[in-house]
Image 1 (tube, rainbow, N blue to C red):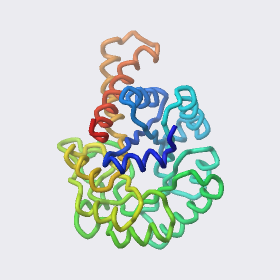
Image 2 (image 1 turned 45 degrees about the vertical axis):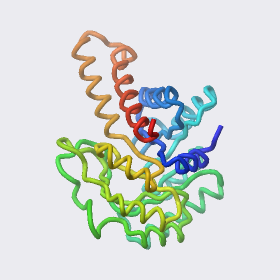
Image 3 (image 1 turned 180 degrees about the horizontal axis):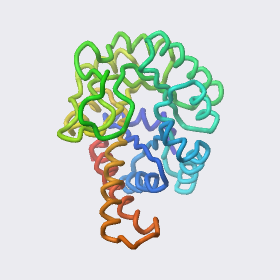
Image 4 (image 1 turned 90 degrees about the vertical axis):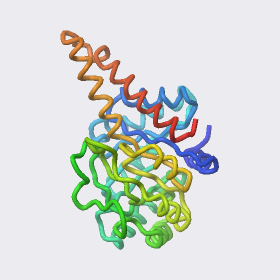
Length: 288
């Protein structure tokens, strides 16, 4: 079975991308895994700090590891958006396959300093773990949006520059890099999210020299995904779309079966809805 690093390298060579899907319960995990398994594609499970608090840090590791070992399947666990060295350390020590230190709201210098500290610690504990750094603020919440969040720039000079990306990667030693290229966390209630700067993505990939990760994928138009993957995006994050699918299916299920009290019965439709949403994105990212 390939490692996460090998799966990313394989995706880049084929000009496709891995899907990264956040979960906050067992239904989400099974939905993502079943979608990936049916398509025979590697997949990354993401858990943010809030999702980790809800699931449990060692519990998330145990759940993903149990599926990987039982099915001999390339399913990996990522500590998504982690805002302190202490939380990065917690995830590394627990056995995560990858971790993101998100210093996007810090100064450039402070972001480099703390990201480098995270990289050094992670590699000391486990050289195989992948560490991702982020440069450029794109918001923090995976939710439905009325407007672009305050402080988020979606075009022009406010986006991540190739020069800054190159310096950041060189000085921190990160394995993966997440830029701000027009992407936004969350998903617009009406219409689609801002368009991605495809030219900038290509320039950043060339300058940075490491695989790129696109955060805030929910709500992005399909053609932007396809174009971005072709020029350097190796992993795409999806969260809000799965949350919306889960909630809508759950509401309908409870309306149809108001007397049902068994969660494993009234949540079946939610699992199916999340699996369908995951499958649709995996098909697009893999070009199948």
